Amino acid sequence: APAKVSTRYGISGVKVRISYSKNKKRRAISET
Image (cartoon, rainbow, N blue to C red; front, side):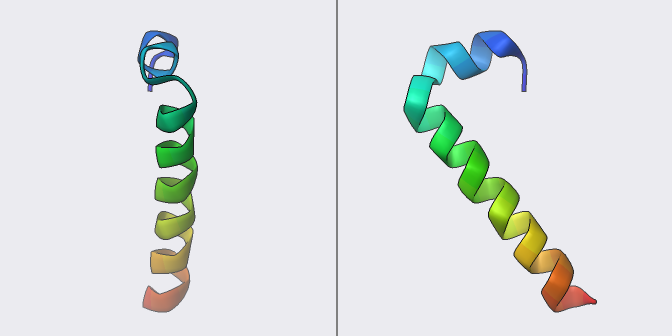
């Protein structure tokens, strides 16, 4: 996501991105 978006949402946006990336990794592991 662009820097503007991250600064726009702030900490909450960062948390969402972290949780999203974690879910993505979990999905990849479960699918394999």
